[in-house]
Image 1 (cartoon, rainbow, N blue to C red):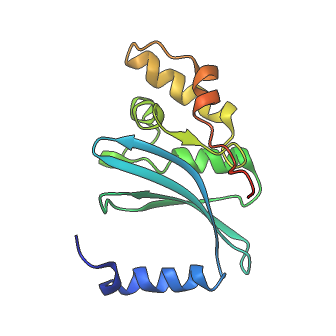
Image 2: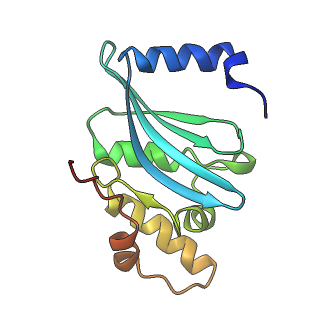
Amino acid sequence: MSNPLDNEDYVAGALAAANGDLEVKSVAFGYYEPTAFHWYRVYDPSSDECRVVLAGSDDATVFFEPCSPDDKSDFTKAFIKTLRFGGGEDDPTLWFVVLGEGGVNPEWIDLQVLRPVLEKGAAELRTDFNFDVWAVKGVIKKKPKS
């Protein structure tokens, strides 16, 4: 693994985020052995532009999609477009595998938009899956204020 401080783009991004120029929110996480995936909402208030960003823990390519900064359904549709192994979009089987043990933040992810994708993935894998049960355990809970 290379030193991230040797990557100019990485350092520039870290500086921009540290200076408060961008708002970064964690919106989801999932796993596809051996990789952990994290999704973020990155918003630039100066331009009112927003992106859904996917980052893998194994230095996998980062994918991002433009999205509406305030439309949860549009944001979720952009979120679904980010998982593109092999160049494909909207692979329900892959989404089911990645998010099966993962979680989403319902403040940003529209569970009703995500439901048919996960249910279709489970059906294609012929796996028993109850979205409502998953949603209870798969929702990122807000951390209590200390």
